[in-house]
Amino acid sequence: MNLKIGCISGDGIGPEIVKEAVKVLEQVAKKYGHTMEYTQILMGGASIDVHGVPLTEDAVKTAKEQEAVLMGSIGGDPNTSPWYQLEPSKRPEAGLLKIRKELNLFANLRPAVLYPQLAGACPLKEEISKKGFDMLIMRELTGGLYFGERKTTEENGVVTAVDTLVYTEEEIRRIAIKGFEIAAKRKGKVTSVDKANVLDSSRLWRKVVNEVAVNYPQVTLEHMLVDNCAMQLVKDPAQFDVILTENMFGDILSDEASMVTGSIGMLASASLNDSKFGLYEPSHGSAPDIAGKNIANPIATILSAAMMLKYSFDLDQEAAAIEEAVSKVLDQGYRTGDIMSEGCTLVSCSEMGDRIAEEI
Ligand code: NAD
Image (cartoon, rainbow, N blue to C red):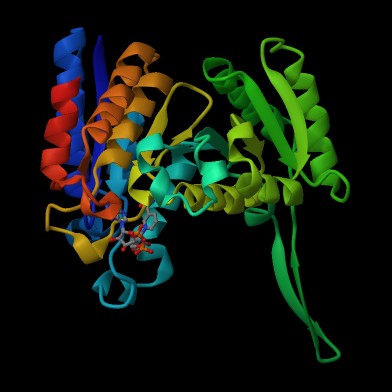
């Protein structure tokens, strides 16, 4: 199979971690007989330096011509980088918002996995962390409170601010379908999270999710209120497989879930549209504090590449080979600085990439 992949190296540690992900992908290509065709795309600070804007129309066009895009991370240190002297619409992050909108990336997937080898990094009690967990938060990314009408008014000296939470049936249905399809490829359970005891938008969410569930008899569906879910994530995270939720709840819960793993350098993510196209990137930022030192953890980006193989190319076996290679290297005790613990061997970013590629 020939895979057309766009590559956004980005800023900070971005180029270092993407290089390692490509190294691992090349090893997969060799072993399983695929060819990978990479097209470089400029975005974020790197694009500002060349074009004065964080994402050009040409870059969007090039991204649309790919089957999937692998990205490092974008942005600099907001306190020192000249990119942040620009008006907000010209800053690095504006590129990310633009590409999500242009490519209609409405489904954000963030796995939160506690590897048994890294259980020590988990801030929860041992009796909870020893069970491990492997969940995926599926967040609606283009609707809800963050995109509804907003205004601030003043009347008789009283200032009032209003934000609007809007969801249409179609917006809910398309993400619910993605959620069930992905759960069917995983452990077969969807926990749909809402606030149906208060919000109309949540009651519609629950109704549409129930309708979609009928088409996936192999997947178990449960509904959970968002406040309960926030508690359950720290009380018993092993109960979850796919958490399906709207934009703002997903924003908050996905950060909570990633903190519970204790290892930000390990967490992948994907944003999908309603075709097979996706943008795959680590959950962390561009870590300008450690950029250029070859000490970043490339695993989140390598696991994002595995998600790309699974969700954009249906190469489940190849994706599993990457995940197993990561696990083996952790078993062997190799660690980058961010996940280092006593008795383990400290390796650089590129050595970590080498070790994982060797295990494919
Ligand atoms: P960050 O995730 O970049 O860094 C937080 C801390 O975690 C830092 O100490 C960093 O060194 C460490 N860290 C992060 N990734 C690591 C890795 N792979 N290996 C080892 N250590 C790692 O968050 P921040 O400092 O708040 O943001 C820095 C820049 O990244 C900002 O410009 C921000 O806007 C941007 N950002 C971009 C994205 C994205 O591209 N999607 C996401 C979040 C933040």
